[in-house]
Amino acid sequence: MSGRWYRIGRLLAAGALAAIALLPAARAVDMNKTLRVAFPVDVTGFDPQAMSDAYSGYVMRAIFDSAYAYDYLARPYKLVPNTAEALPVVSDGGKTFVFKIRKGIYFAADPAFKGQQRELTAYDYVYSYKRLLDPKVRSPNMDLLQDQIIGADALIERAKKTNKFDYDTRLDGLRALDRYTVQLKLSRPDYNLLDNMTHWAMGAVAREVIEAYGDGSGWAVEHPVGTGPYLIKEWKKGSKVILEASPTFREVIFPVSTDPADRDIVASMKGKRIPAIGRVEVNIIEESNPRFLAFDSKQLDFVYVPADFVNRVVAGGKLKPEFARQGIQWMRTVEPSFTYTFFNMEDPTIGGYTQEKIALRRAIVLGYNISEEIKVIRQGQAMPATQPIPPGLPGHDPDLKRPDPYNPVQARALLDKFGYKDCNGDGFRELPGCKPLVFKLWTEPDALTRQFDELWKRSMDDIGIRTEFVKQKWPETLKEARGGKVVAWQLGGIAAVREGESFLNHLYSKMIGTSNYGNFRLAEYDRIFEQAQLLPDGPERNKLYRKLSDYHYTYAPAMLGVFRYSNALLHPWVQGWKSHSFEQYPWWYLDIDTARRAAAQ
Image 1 (cartoon, one colour):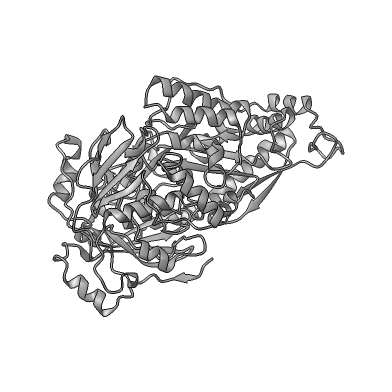
Image 2: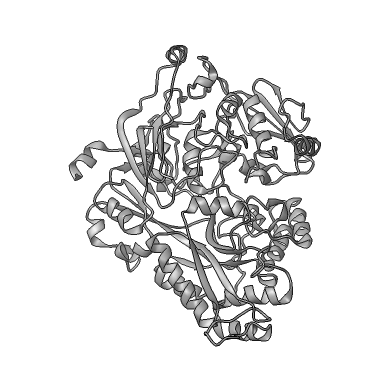
């Protein structure tokens, strides 16, 4: 998910400045407090309906408001209103949702509003949700509402013909009943909709902003304006993102909890308005060593420990004494994520649905030493993925066991059987008919990825497949993958909401060009996927999810990787932190004990 400078300042007209003065007194945010964090990859932009990568999403959650959110402290996770007044009224057998937006919530000031104080309304959510459906936007999150909104299909087809989506046409399935009331009418019950309404892609944008700053696709990735706790102060691509507390953010108090496990968190944050920190510096530090050293030298306030550095921090299931003595907090959790390597089914070398092409991909899967990846590269901080849906999410089957896929003997036998032989004696196999065979794999130019490259090369050399690595930055590869130009890429997916369906749509044909980077097309898979969408969480739907999972073994369109553990380290002056599956960077809930940080420096 170039190194030019982008400075997205609040270029306010005098009228806009005056409008801010009319707002209620600003909350008690300390603009002198700075939280310093790091991302291992660059962000791609900040348009909630246009972006799908997790790291851009972490930033967008701080800028844009969805109608609902998860209670930060409650476990199990519980849906709560965010900008909505209450949970929606659901009727018509789960096909009609009505919710009201709270009055008095305002967008950050921007010239697009022509000096006026701009209140959030129901019309903003209707517009934002319609952007998910606009063919020109090509939203990678279109599946959140795809094929559900009554009347949308005709509007979408008309937009495809005219190259213009008519946002002003009345849409019976998605409209504002009045200034503060949103109604959604669905063609079928959607049992994931409430959770999906916490996603950043269902956050509210202002039409004026998109029309003022949008590009040819209607994306406004470099000029985010939302109603959330922070706004972008500065963005230097490939280097850093600086967030600043929004002066127009509403009054929100840190949540309460009666759970004894939250006692210390609640005591340190009781009664505080959020955000409490005025500035967040997000540094892009791709290499593991400088990222970890930046935390160790107190230049970062918290860090997710790079996989190849875990043994420097933890021993025998405990934080090493040199870190424990400093009061550093260590939190280890199973991420709601999995890694996989997709294969482009349209590539002339490894793509296709014939037996010999399936055999080639199966051999690659059998030849890759996943056990070594876990043991050596990830230092034991992962487990083999048995299915696409990670642990802890609806649809995950904890009883599903898979044998260790690493079997180079079987891989070589499979290649021999289907005619992949070494025709010229150079030690590498050719395609049937002795045409060249090169397995191309896209990877990133950092030290950790180089370890994966070495493992891939050893594994493929062992079964006689020549490997070629295409090295480029993550955002560039993501762009090419969406265009169907990447042959194979090892990447990961992490849940943004509490549902498992999104981990299955990477093989759904309607997601080609978005999350289906491998261009997998199979009518039977689509049929079962759509059948599962009609069912609530439970045994019947889980059976269908199991069938969908099995397609990874039947056709080998992707290699399942691992379920990862995350290891977070926090310096003792960070307050308010609680591990949260869907808020991996919960900046607006945190505070800094500046006196304690100063003493440690």
